[in-house]
Amino acid sequence: MENQQFHTLLNAIENKEAVLGVVGLGYVGLPLAVEMVNQGFTVIGIDLDASKVDSIYQGDSYIHDISSDELKKVMQSGRFQPTTDYSMLRVIDALSICVPTPLSENQDPDTSYIETVVDQIKLHMKPGMLITLESTTYPGTTEELIQQELDKVGHEAGKDYFLCFSPERVDPSNGRFTTFNTPKVIGGTTEACLKLGTALYSKYVETVVPVSSPKVAEMSKLLENTFRSVNIAFVNEMAMMCDRMGIDIWEVIDAAATKPFGFMPFYPGPGIGGHCIPLDPMYLSWKAKGFRFYSKFIELAQSTNDNMPYYVLNKTSTILNEYAKSVRKSNILLLGMAYKPNIADLRESPGLEVYELFKESGANVSYYDLHAASFKDKHGETVHSQAFNLEQFKTYDCIVLITNHSDLPYYDIAELGVPILDTRNAFRSYTHSHIYKIGHSVQHPVLEPSEAVLV
Image (tube, rainbow, N blue to C red; front, side):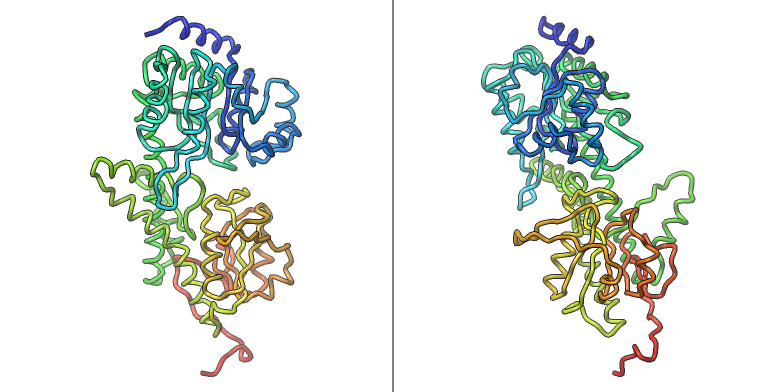
């Protein structure tokens, strides 16, 4: 049912007079806010992290996909106002919620950030506001945590305010697909909600895909990333199988990928990272258990992917054994710590787990990552990246490549002669006998007489 508030907001959207809001100015929210401004809207960005707000005002971007120059232009437009003040919700016509949705230690969804935003909406919501949740979560979240909560204080969805869910599809460092040209799925709690949501997103997203309900939109996001999790787990298991059988998994994948139909290549690695793939399937598994449905695929994929850092440890141990060394007391360098190439993002990076496993095994472990300058270990201690120094790198007993950053000088590193475990096939162009890779059995190195050890 379309009322006057619906028509007022629709008209404001069509004329780009609506004041838009984004809560959560992280890797999803900031690019979204920037695109909104670039398309002619006035935007208020809300984040409780005052340092982020200060950085935005200074034109200093902390998000890889938004350059500082682009951010400065956005600020110079005068149409972007970042703030830590939730009372600004009173002037916002359409709000996008882009807050984190992590997992608890028990692998249950932590929706506390969403709940905090809803509490603030109750206090400061402008009548007739369009609210769109973008945070990845389990099916039913939009209705259970937002609609039902606002119902309790007398606000009716589709009448007093409008509510949608549109899952973020951000792929950090992807130069081809951006906020604007990545299709956007959206589902509304009522027909009027969906119409407004579609109208709004169509103003700054090239393709909008309406679906019948928020649950469908929520489920679509989980399907996308569970699909990836399961297939990555499958190829990780295939890599361990090929290792056992003396077959090169990377060559196998390249061969299979020549089939022009019915096959999509996935690649093994030291584990899975980022906010989506390690977490999203667990939202779905958790919710499914409430319906007495237990997803064997999700649990098996999670177990397989979680095991990859242990596989990397064992593989490194096998390599060191070929040189009459053990992990204990060996000096090991991890190359890269970010969860994917060419970014600084450490969220859920398998490198963090690999680091801890080597430490627990008694190794002296360091890391080098030009993009990720430091991280906190499980004890809360700050670990800093080593400076790039080939002479220093030459002193390590083993180098383990975790992240295949494009700016690593692979030739120079290969020429050091230090045993290398390549978890990403980044050294595929080099045939040195001291370079090993996951998914392929260890071949005995040819030792010089002076290196041979009498047993």
